[in-house]
Image 1 (cartoon, helix red, strand yellow):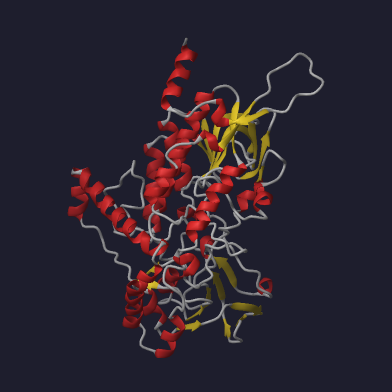
Image 2: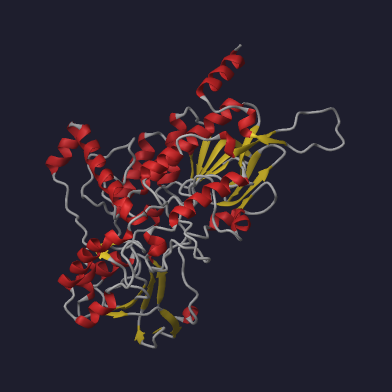
Length: 528
């Protein structure tokens, strides 16, 4: 990267969100952009998470871009290696490699109000951009709890998202901390080879059977020969999940039948009443993320596995001590304790128009944005998978593609406005959007289900999940409403001013209507 390179758009991250943004920009005719990636290859969370058993809990044909279908998924639920290979394929198919800036971790992004651009400092140099698209994702920075004595542990310690493949677990005594989506895949993968596995469980998860199987050669041939069949398959998977949303968002009481299926999944594998009691949740299913596995419970029933119904309290040498006082001698500690979701680290590196970081702006009210994309005081800055865009039962790729629609129209609006211009979300619009979201959240299972999940921030506010269907979100992000933004224009040059005036700030809707007719008229006037 050359010093002080300037691009129209800088995309941060090369997972599904970042690569999707890059593809959409090219399809909109924008080629003056870069994708900044801190690692040495693309893939995002599917590059970083390579632990044993890592796989997706969304069906393969739904967990892929609609504009880049893959007829050759080998399984109905794909493994990490298949998804990562798919993202490499997308990168090559859409010619994204020339735009990649690998090993370029973003250290700081600062808004320059005079030139109406972002100054981006990275580990490989500095550049500027008119528009920043942050696609770092909520599952990018592992969270490891501050456990007293952990720094003195003589054995091996690592997080599931930073798996040490050079460390051989065979014959070792291993402590697995956490029972989330990663842990229920790791446990059955390593149980047969370790000497002893001690699982620290603060809260038992609801675990549904995983209906995974190999996709036959005939199915793949059919999808390659008749692509419409793959689209129909994807549509069916999507439609079923859209119908399920009402139970999560409006009628949690209807989830009782789903709970019964999960109980039977456990009872089939776990015969010990004491272990069943430890593994039975006391909250409504769906309040925490529903997990999928047909091998987790059988692994826990093995004689070399011990389930501790308590969290890790401290470490004394090679002894791990639970909150209930129970102890275990271990050689390795594996943390499956999730990520910084409601306190995204990237927010500390974004400095807005008033000199505050995004983290400081969110410190009082929690993460807040307009339509999951833009934040007041941070002009021409967007996020993919922003606040309240997560899902509890469907594919995040659907939400990402909706946000890509919003990005595309944002770029079009800037084109229509012309000149040096920036859009800044109006505080009132951000508040109104979030008030509506939180009002709808009151009836959902995430608010009424009786659990404390990672969907909630430190104030108990759900800043993570979208309380509606993917269809509703797509409608809400189809177009940019200029009435929700202030337009910032660069000051006109004047001869020898005593000091440069502040940029002009006016409601964006007053500056340029967002109607197609108005856009056409504007272009015609410009051509004339």
